[in-house]
Structure formats: C-alpha cells, structure tokens
Length: 162
Length: 434
Image (cartoon, rainbow over the protein chains, first blue to last red):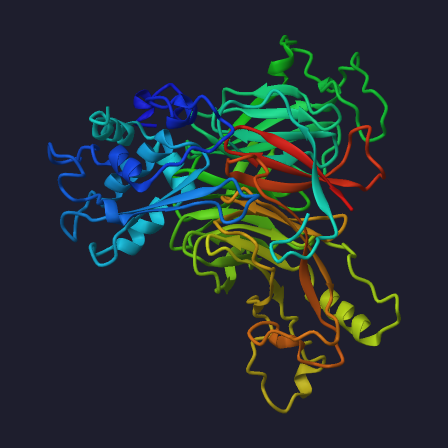
C-alpha cells in the first residue's frame, strides 16, 4: 500500500514512547491510585494538530470532564477512565484525530488495567455520535495506528508530552 | 465461584495451559483445526502461530504474506492429507496457505504418528526442507479496499467469505488449484463488516456490522442476494456464529409432549444464529419456517399473495442471554458438542451459558419470544453456568472458542476446552469443572 514505507517498524503496543506509569512503581502488587488530576496532566500537554497550543490551554480537555471508575467487583481488575473532550468549534474536522491522540496517550501511559473511553462532550460537536463510535472501536483504532501518515500526526501531537 | 448475584454457579473455568511461547504483541483470534490437534493464532505481528493442542507448544510461525496485522484466520473444512488456512489482514488482502499434513510432525486423529518419510504427495521439485517454510503462501486475494476483518469457509469448503471495513462482503470460489474467482460482492451494509459466518447445512451466509445490523445472504438464480436484515442491536455487532447442526443439548426424555413439540419446531427452523455486540447484549435469532406451498396450485381458488418462490427469510430475536458483560462483547462461540455458548470481550470476562427448559412457574419475559406463546410448546431459557473475571489478567480478550480437548489429560473423546486469545499476545486453554 501507499503508506507502507511510513509504518513504524516497532510494535506500538509493546514499545510505547515512554515507560508506563506503573513501571516506576516498586510494588506492582498494589494498584497505585491514579486520580483525575493525574490523567489531566497526561493529556493537557498534547498539542492541537492545527495550532501550536496544548489541548489544556484550548480547553479541549478539562479536569471536570475526566471520570475514573474503579473496579466494580473485588474480583475485577479493570478500571475505566472516561474523558469527554470539547472541540474548539462544533464542526471541527479534527475531532477524531484529537480524540485518538487522547486515547493513545492514555493507553500508553496508564497501567493496562485502565480501559480508556474518549467521547465528545455532549452538545459540543455536530457529528459527535459518529466520532464517538469511531473512537470506541478497538479495531479501527488498532488499524489507524498501523497507518504511517496518521501515526506521524499523532507523534507530533504527543511530542510535547514530556 | 459465586455469580455476581451471589448464587453459586454449577461450573468453574479452570486454567489448563497457556500456549508458549506467546506472541509479544496483540493476538486477535485462534482457530482450531477441524481435524488435527493444532490451532492457528492470528497476531498483529503479521504472523500466524501454529500451536499444538497436545503439548501447547509453538509448532510453526507462518509469516511473510501480509504487510499489516493478521486479524483473522480460518481452516478450510473437509480436506484430507492437506491443510489449507485462509487469513485476513489489515493490509486489505486475504491469503491462502497450504501444507501437506505428512510433513506436519503431528499426530492425526487416529493417534498414530504420521510417517515422516512419506513424501508421495509433496512436489518432487520442492527443494525446501526448512520446517518453517512448509507453509506455502499459495495465493493472495485482492479486492477489498481496506482492512479485512473476518474470513469464513462454507461448511463444505466450497466458498470462502471475506468482509472488510470497506462495508462489503465478498464470496470467493476456488475454480482450480489456487485460482479463486470472485462470485459475489455484497455491498448491503452501511458500515464496516465485522464478521462473517456460514450456516452449517445450507449455503446461507451471515454478516455483522458497525451499522448495528446482521444481514443474511443466499444464492438466487446465480446471484447472491440479501434475504434478511436482523435489526435489534443498538451498537456494533462484533461477531455472529451459527448453532452447530445436530447438537442435542436438550431432550424430551421425560416424555413431556410440550418439550417434544419444541424440539420438532426447532428442527423445522434449523440452526439458530447468535450475535454479540458493543451494546453488551448477546442475542439468539431464529428462522420462522416458511409455510408449505400449496400442493395443488392449479386448483387454488385464490391466487396466493405470497410469492412462493421468494427467497427472503423471516428471522426474529428468540432470546437474550443473561447480561454479564460490562464492556463490549467481542466474541461468541457455540459448542458443537454441548450446545453451550461462550462469550468474552473488553471487560476480560469469560462467560459460559447453557440453554435449559424453562421451569413452568417461571415468569416469561414480555418483550421477546413472541412465537412461543403457545402453551402446548415448552420454552427454554439461557443461564450462566460459569464465569471468570480477568481471564487474561487486566488485558482485553479478543476471542473465545470451543475446541476438542486433545492433551493427555482429556477425560472423554468429546471433552472440550475453551481457547481464549488476548491483547497481550496470550492464548490460553480452559476446562470446565463442576
């Protein structure tokens, strides 16, 4: 295909751009507590794909729109984090890419027990339903990450997250 | 293990083995061979891993044919002496791989070691004795415009169906050796087609989609055509699977005529379809048998309004399985041996269900099962019989399937294991224990 030469040769899922938060922890047996502020700090420095500004400064991501749910039963290892993003304009054509950037950033940075849900904040985008459906589709996200052009855009957005 | 409601479940899922070495990147699906004690695992590292069901060890890594993730694979049924594997990849192509079984280094069904010295079926001009190269990438099937998501062989092996994010379903037929012809391009869906499955007895194909629907297709006067649309799911339908033919999980041994009547009706309708979705539900769909056509059409006083030759079928939602999943249900598989069903998904749970006769006192749900209001016909219900959380620790599980148990610990010829395939590259086998 057209983009094959651009596809990164490493495996994204196992070679993230930086170590996961959990790898700092000396005690892997106890799930460390991750709060909304920490999640906000991870994504607020992502660059907007069009502007030289961060998603935090553009108020695309906002602390009150981050919701963490801890395991629903004592036997379940799964936590979820829901991030509702607010596109700068209701017809923003890059809403999907921004959402993908947030999802990728969190999946790389949070321990694997976190399921990451990224959605458009209600009433802030004209095609929120379709964007939400794409962002929630694991197969589409996985295929997007094998697309060299798109990965280039995402890497640029995430390069400011240090 | 107690159910979420606190009542104990009759079975537990016990880990039997983890196939090793595991892939070090996401694995999507594991397909048990129809005859040999091996499975094939589709991996995002662009390989298919062939594992033994007797030792749980890696036998071969099949690579080189695809440029992106291998999303899916399926063994061609009905072959002897040769194995044929179809793969579907995010590189928009499907692949066909072949290998003579006498070079496989594995035992056939009869338990006798295969004769390694025999090479009668192998091309004499083959100079390649490297074991890893014995899987020959025979042909690439090009045509889809974007990622292939699922591939499925028809029951007799005549047809191969493939589906893609390009919203289409293709049907291929092998005309002669490695020459596959496209016999249908079905563009019915309004979104990615996530899975395809064939009816076990008829040339009837089902597909499920990102557009939240399931569609069924049959050949009509040389043209494949959509014969039913199954609406009901509120989100992406990840997988469809047909009920195996001749599975006998329920009997009327107690002589209850209403149960016999149910079984007669079931035979008339034929194998059912099961689907799982992002909407967290798992649903069973059933065909409404067609009325018999008038045996003496010439003497009929009234012309029949119903086109007797119509190929369209009427399918309805017969049941919903108890909802135990908390996130997208990616995979559903119907057991050939027991009629049980296993599901898994994003929440990392593995859930096993069984169909049973509904107790006469039990309340009947109002919203489903409209066809069984007849008091002379018994009714069934689905119950969860085993469940485990965190089956692959904190990782998502992409696929679960039933598979005949083949290792030394098997307790009967038809004992089955559940094989699960997960995001971290792990493939695991589970037994049901009571």
